[in-house]
Image (cartoon, rainbow, N blue to C red; front, side, top):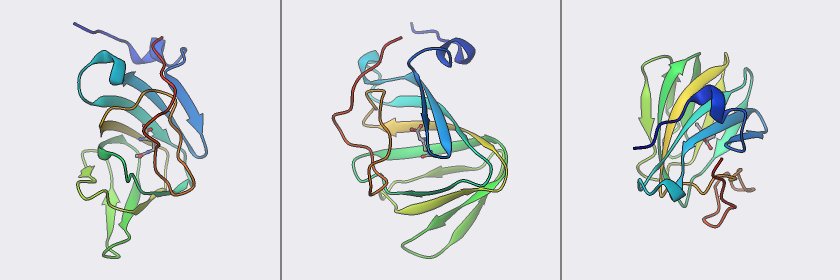
Length: 132
Ligand code: 9YT
């Protein structure tokens, strides 16, 4: 069994800080679960242009307020606590935070640990690993 505490993971190499967001990666590829699981904070005012071409991602909003724009259809979906979205089609999208948002995120295949977005808004498949 694997048991980890967010507050402890935040003080370790599991917390990645990037442009407009940070992500504490509680489960990673080397845990052998077949997915990774992260708690992500999107900072107020952030506008992220994302396209996870190498991964499927599911996101659940714990707190805060924002929107996701589906660039294939032009649809804009409001995000608030309790909303989940899944990028089942590797959907190209824009994520906007009107207020700081806390999100629980699952990636398949699992991240190694150190991933940040490349120029096209994707994560590469061969990033550096972290454990603790
Ligand atoms: C919702 C989203 O994709 N935010 C960017 C960070 C990502 N969730 C991650 O690496 O945890």
